[in-house]
Image 1: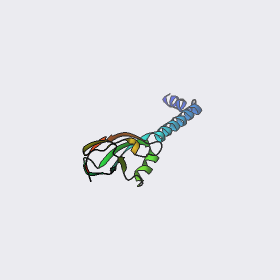
Image 2: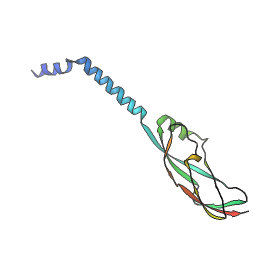
Image 3: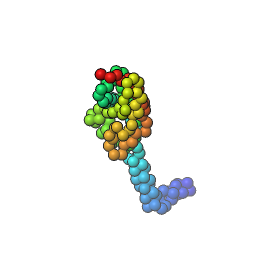
Image 4: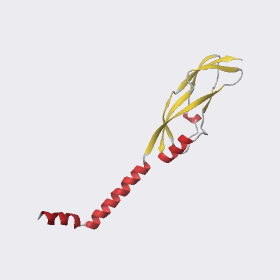
Length: 130
């Protein structure tokens, strides 16, 4: 009796069961492929100071970025050495301590990658006249 009910369970509507299993596998694989990944990348800062000023000191020299995007693009980006630093121009410089905001716009990212967080978001730069 039990053997007969087990046999009917597996053999009854077999085509629908196979189709449902295939659809489930396809959906599962598509979710795995499309999932965005997150990486951390430390990027050095380069400060651009307009004459007649000269930079004496700055609080931070690197920015820690938390980037999100498709796995293959992030992998290529993390290995890419062309993005070696973030260039930050100081607008309206004045002698003494200046607070400079770090904008995400200063970093050129490939399409599909977005910045989740950035630390620090600003730095303090000490300037003197030449």
